[in-house]
Length: 562
Image 1 (cartoon, rainbow, N blue to C red):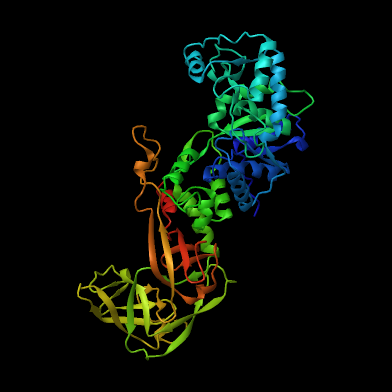
Image 2 (cartoon, rainbow, N blue to C red; image 1 turned 120 degrees about the horizontal axis):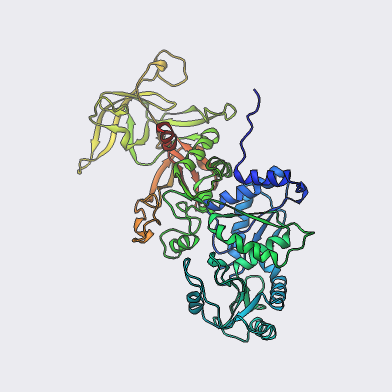
């Protein structure tokens, strides 16, 4: 069968066009430039997969550059977490760099701009500067300090650098055009005073460059060929290019900024500021809470690098903002775990079942297939005895014809074991069932080849032997918000839509003993219940499992309806 050529996304088309126009392939270079002010989330994964994917496709280097120009919000913890996430996703960077590496060069260039009459120091506060910028339909007004002499500007800028002024008293602005239809071109800020220690440079700098001044110049220093940003930076492109004009040398590669739509996911928020709120206010248990859309949260919940990369590829690169259905992400992890996750039995809401005609004190080891989707996965043994646990919802005293699980007077098959029939129940003083009494057909053992073993019954249920079961904690996670777009309501706080049922803890579930050696990060399918993985909170005394995703595939059903 001939290979179907995958169509290029519009950013790949731009790269191909540049190569066709004569750009040397060896000059291609990309970067992923996160600000270390929080943990990466699934939206960042789209940019990671895009930039590193282009690097792989074209055999080009990709830099990891930390945009660390705001010491108020940035921490080494975030730097370390970002590197861990990118490595976990399976990507390798050419160099780890920092915008702070370029502080001296940026300062020197700013001095040159002052000497060229293209930058000036403004003594006004931020409120006055904002008022003078005008509106999209009304031109701005020149600052009264716009025409200061070069000598005075140089003196003031050096004093800003030396820490002679208080925060908020002076800024350095580019001198462009206060009547520009693009308000970002109306004498934008280049530097502000901050008497804050930086996580890398300490207290050596008292002024810090603004993003627009830093970003393009950093791309230029690193000789990035294609600077790929999300759509909110589209209006910044004109300023990006203007700043490049001030330093560009024709012998160098000139970075090209192009924009794509950010990845938004339903039933969550993607703003790092809002995610930080959830963490700091205790609505979640840290950045790696399995309900969070962070890469660390998804990893802890049981998502895999492959599932996130496949999700990013399927969701694609768009030119317009959109919301991707969470079900698509769930589809990809379910698809992968179905192929690789061992099948085991666990009972989350147990009720005791006694097989009255099974010999007391007898136990046997039954054979169970580890994964029917993987012929190399092999088999395991599962202990069986007279008393077992089943799910409480798998039994009803009386049920209609559509209930194919266990009910009085009817039969079901125990997974990998025997056919049983429910005969009576034992209840407590609150009329709650505490025991179900059944009989079994000893000739109906699964896989025995006997005529009785091939007898058809409509239901099959899972179970664990009481004498052999291990106790475990199970955490059932649901969507963090009840609303598909919790931060789209201008008249409401996004936290009003927090889902009070987003986490349900089961302190005493029971699992089969084969799981005794499971370690943090291991994934399993709890048969008939969903996919689960071992949480780092697990101890030698008690395993803790997170539900990664349920068995039901809602995204596939959505696609069928289209």
